[in-house]
Image 1 (tube, rainbow, N blue to C red):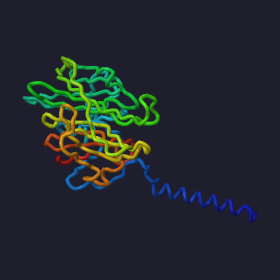
Image 2 (tube, helix red, strand yellow):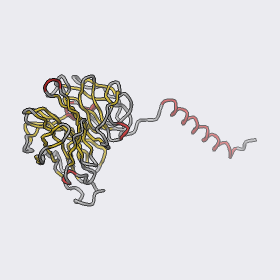
Image 3 (tube, rainbow, N blue to C red):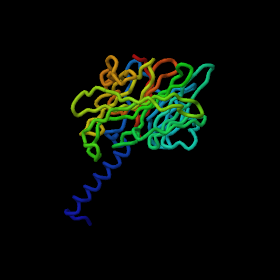
Image 4 (tube, rainbow, N blue to C red):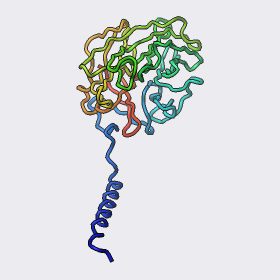
Length: 303
């Protein structure tokens, strides 16, 4: 026999069970930092991911897009079918990738490893960058661009730069570290035949608490088009600005940036855009880095 005192707790337990069943039926709400499906704006075409994975680098290749991510399990898959490709031997922790196309259908595949500061090609060439490109305060080598130019290969890599968070001891929190570019003359199977040309980028600072880091770059003639992403210093996962900005080979900005937070609206919001490349038909492709939720590459004309 149930007493009046016992009916209250029993009723509360039943209500909790009902709430749990309803939650299971409709699904838990998405995390505040999980990308959700938003219809792409006009002119943007999505290439869906074959499975959930991170995206930190992308390269257009015949038949699809080569994708690498921050986790080893995410490396070396070609979208949309998910076909694997072999990484350069013994290269771990790949952060970015690019494929260049030379005369007579020649292709060169390059991969960049952040922790080991190593650039390697698909035919045995390797180069290790000096300590200027080492990881500091979670900042490291992030982007890679390759082109055929003057009867040879030019490879550009970028050390991302950006503001220093409170978790970093040296330099002081709030310090802005300028992104740094190295350009190498690359010989397939050997690596660089001379020291790289190194210079800093001078990106604009939109506000006191906002600091841009470079997440990837592509060649654009004799300039570099870079993808700049800004997180709010006091709210780690708030991506306030996402710009495509051209720089000359002295590190100076050229013209006005394409501000994707204005051009794309809510489609850009909440996504850590980290991957950039030209498509084979002359458009741009971008990808964002996230572990869960909706995942796709965005293909669009530029400008």
